[in-house]
Image 1 (tube, one colour):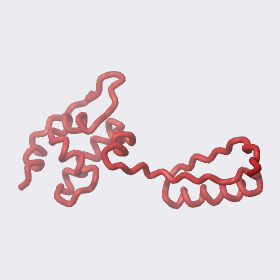
Image 2 (spheres, helix red, strand yellow):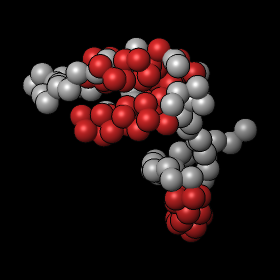
Image 3 (cartoon, rainbow, N blue to C red):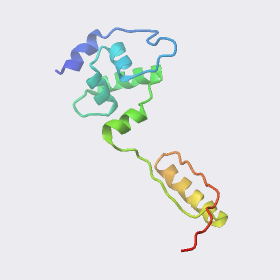
Length: 126
């Protein structure tokens, strides 16, 4: 039996876990469930060493309080931005086809593309 299973049986139930304006965090879920912050983090990451029941409880709590991972914090911790940038000419015929292609690819990855164009830069002669 692991440490999180022991906490699971005695975890307090809190009906109003957040103060007005408070953003839900791993610490909030930890406080509500009575589990360690590390256990909450591993449960949300689907770690194999966390029981199915604990994962279910943590996800249920996270959904209930509206927890969303802090993307900036994840980027700082992992060093991964999960951002792809593409620079290309802004001729209308090229951009319309490319925008459709990028949108289709992003949809396949369940991502949200951000596509913008800037005014054409004057061509420089060398």
